[in-house]
Image (cartoon, rainbow, N blue to C red):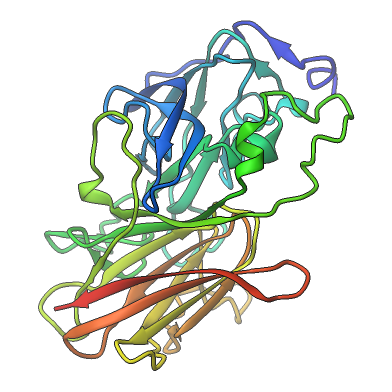
Amino acid sequence: MDFSSEQLEVENPVTEFPQVPAFAVDFEFHSRDLVLDDGAEFEMWSFEDEQYERGFPGPTLRVQEGKVFHATVHPSKGPHTIHWHGMEPDPRNDGVGHTSFEVDGQYTYQMQPEAGRPGDPNYGAAGTYFYHCHVNTPLHVQMGMFGPLVIDPVVHPDYPVTPGARRAFVDGPEYDIDTEALFAPYCVDPRWHEMNHADGLSGEDAGLNRFEPRHFYLLGGELARRPAGRERVWSLSVLRANVAGGARKPTLLRTVNANYLPNMVTFTDAAGVEVPMAELVSHDGRPFRDTSVPGAPAPSCRDSGYPLTTSRLAYGAAERYDMLLHPPAPGRYLLRVDWEDWITGAVVGTRTIPIDAT
């Protein structure tokens, strides 16, 4: 409590008990006018590194359980932080300003994702997360200050991994690395993109209680093929999926809800008929396990004999799901994403992406 009081804005906070990292990244802040896939142009703020310069969303980060990770942020245009949504490290490294500090100069965040244990629901961090600024959070996230974070599991000797595959969690199902993909629903209220860094922080009515999006996007794509370079917007246009029963492991689709409206995700065939082809394996970085017998090992739902398979998924802001895709036959399928009004439930936006199953 003493530490968390009066720590609002610090020039160069010190990383306590620094360890040698297995992976480290340097983040700069950028502010750019970017053109999104419908031709609309908005001022966007985000994080950048040498690979993803001035792009959106922020760089894709991939870390393995049990490994020390460093991320150094160099803010500009006012103080910023990096909050590791769902990871919950210690307060100094959690990036929540009112329980730690906001960074003016630079700060190196340090964490070590917990390693999973087979059959134990209380250990492990493998899954899909995202990071974002936690200063004037609603505005800064809408402006684009977020990016995907993937935690990969340790390889346990009792659960070896097939070449070309990876497990979703330590004792979880295997998936095909080549077709692994991520998508993030996102929408833009143009009025918000004309605001300044601290609008609304002094109690004034800046209009942040009204979110009225006019543009709707699906960000993401195959993780192994994210385009690098300057001023690139990572937009999803098509997905690949391996057919159930084929020689390759199934495709893993990671999803991060990066907007402020509820979404309904529906999988259909080319004619629009729903197809239950999505097997949910984890939610918010926590595997779905059978914990019905206290004190006994908790296998995955799939290994317990009842995989959580669906054609529809409803979820809201900041939720994440990992799902295996099981198209029943080769051909074209569709992923439809609807944005819904918080109050009326009316669909206010829709995007549809083809899924090519082979």
